[in-house]
Amino acid sequence: MQMEGKHLLQRFFLYANPGKPETIPVVAAFADLLSKHNCDILLDTWLYEHLGIGRACKADELDRSVHAAVSFGGDGTLLRILPRLAENDVPVLGVNMGHTGFLLELDPGDLHSMVNRLVVGDFYLQERLMLSCRIHGQGDFLVMNELALTRGHNPSSIVVEVTYQEERVYTIHGDGVLVSTPTGTTGYTLSAGGPVLHPDAPCRVVVPVCSHIMTQRPMVLPVHGEIGLTVHGKCAVRHQISLDGQLVIDPDTNSQVNIKSAERPARFIRFTPQRFLTRLHQKQLAWGNHIYGGTK
Image (cartoon, rainbow, N blue to C red):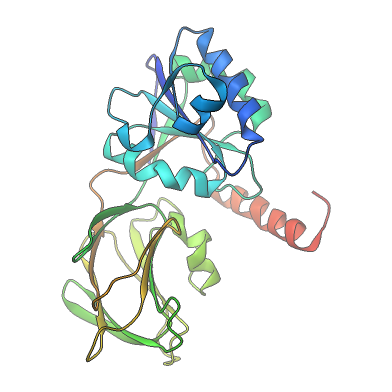
């Protein structure tokens, strides 16, 4: 789903990967462009310590007073702040400082020409489905790509029962299971043998990970309704729950997870209508070049 912007933006939160110091001059140059438009600039704490401009703000302190966030890095950098942004209906612009960026919109060289459009709201808002995941005993979490329930460091297989609307889908004996949004199907889910889904598809996908039962294949389920995951065992079975590859939980009891589609979507700032299949093809070529050293 795409929605048009067209309103003045005055307060921006700038976020970057602390592990990529090369983002600092790019953020500094962009902050300078925003300041010329008299924008209020909030910087993630580590960026503020390096640049000393604007105001310091932690990602978990963001609220609805922020008009937009700009993430400098790769998809992983953006995924770290997406739950907080979605909770507060803050749209995000992704600036690609890495190799593969399905969620990202601009390269650093595009910022100067696009800042005027950004400030006046001359862009589209693209909404993407997120998952609302309740992990019993741990809390509620928002997920953009996938929840992975796996054996983690456990050398043995685990048993996970998967249900949809309290109806059994299958009981997996293997390394675990993934539950993914359409957006997440170009990541971990794809590597685990799942299908690629168009991001506008109204559905979710469940993918067994290395199941011992060869007939257990990925299952595409409707966007509505609850997906349940239950780890079985006579005593506590060692396993891990990973959320977007960012947050890892090591439960000390057999987990029960309930997954629904989140009420609020993630919202991405786009300057041109998205052509997913074209971008998928481009990224597939980039993967091959990156891995095998072909021409960029």
